[in-house]
Length: 126
Image (cartoon, rainbow, N blue to C red):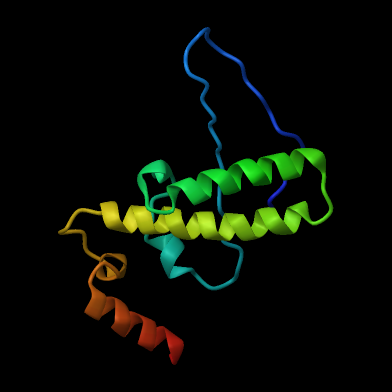
């Protein structure tokens, strides 16, 4: 996880409308072996996090990480990395939940409690 951008960019556009905070991020997998999760998700997608159960917590955490990074507080990179891991997990959950019911592949199996448990057991002791 590379949590810190060289600087935070701010864009001001428009007039008297409601203030919007747009946070963009990306996740990359680095490794020699193919990653089955990364191979089964689109290269680009969005997840409306505010509507998810963890939405308020994620929003507060993102605000905290942005403020922490802007003030260059010691340890801010570690905090950003941990929050990024949670954010990725929640984005992935949202993607899996929004997949069409007839979507093939093992990611769709994660929605079924029995299949999900079997997959977890198989990966716990390959």
